[in-house]
Image (tube, rainbow, N blue to C red; front, side, top):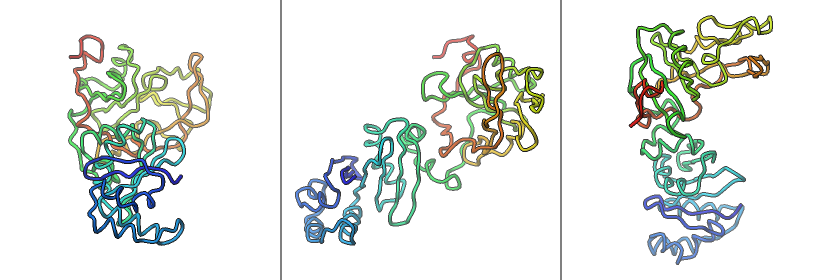
Length: 308
């Protein structure tokens, strides 16, 4: 647990260390990170004690020179601590994350001076980090409002074109929702995503669940009903269907809440489907970064054209 890395917040360079405070106390190490001779000597003169004030003073003095302290916490979790702002720390650590973090790595970034911390999964945050739009990793109320590339209705698909890539296609606005679903179903669209209707509703798409999988009400248990509009199975008023998805995030425009699978099972032609019982947070901790979404013609999605 004592081992980790020091990252230079300005250059992005980093060094593997045996113990953060002891390592930076050695004047040759501090000088190698561009720390002034005066500060390097001040670091070396501080008293080191692992559980006391001395070690914290060493770490904070080093961080005040623009260094970022990072280390792993078990499999798949990394912390980044600094006295820089959250945005500055993410920017300074971007190179390290790209080279050392996997898609499922859980990153915790802390600003020790201001007492602020954010947590994100690197795979979700990667498009935002690579685009340099670090504000989209801040709490939702601090993120800028984005302009959607297309007016409703449209279909938004995750991983249809390539892994980790979002695509968005305009849909005909004069077609009723059931026909939009029929168009996508007939094309054999297997990617997950969202179907944004003209009236403000936004339906979650999944290859194994409504509204892309037809549901035969006669095959469902008696206590389960199916919404005649969105095709989502529900067990009562406490388990809303997708037609209630009209409250959208101010930053990205996707639903803030949507029905998520519960414990009850429904069998559809030999396949299992969870019945939604509770509402969950729609887009997770990271808003969709619309500048990273590729807009493609609908005929490409429907297999009638080739993507350039």
